[in-house]
Image (cartoon, rainbow, N blue to C red):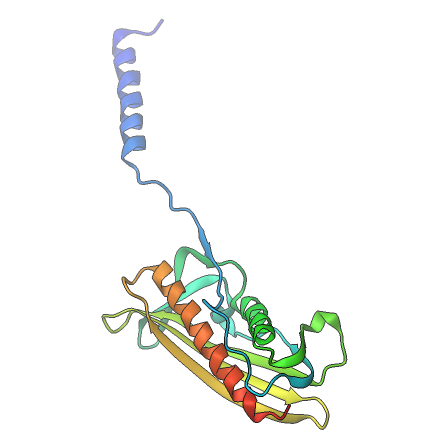
Length: 202
């Protein structure tokens, strides 16, 4: 048998628990983003380069190739956003996006990934140097820097090697705005790279 005093105590605990439950903030959910250009690049001037080009997965050292999205909070300080992630590693997403961009631009006769194990004429590789949301200067910018190279397999000759940089405003400073800026940066870099392929003979 529950006494009146005990009943009052239990009721008080229940009410306290309900108040605490109602006042606590909901737990944020994880959000995932793709890294891809907003639009297709223009067709390569002069037509496709003769031969098969193999696009290797890009490299990204340390936290640059982790799935958590990075932001710069100081001159030499990088942090990872909580609850905001890339859908895959940046290196893998950029490899797929570059293959699609090169095919769309008809940059080579054939563009493949290493899994197809074809006898390639050209090897395209790259390194992600920067992929960060810069919020250090009172503004908000999506900063991307990628080194891309084209090696001609016959004779082991470097046909093109260049570092590409793009910085786009991320209006509002939110993560989704930063991701939109990264998408624009990818498009700019790939367009510049395909334009530079013009120095390689068809």
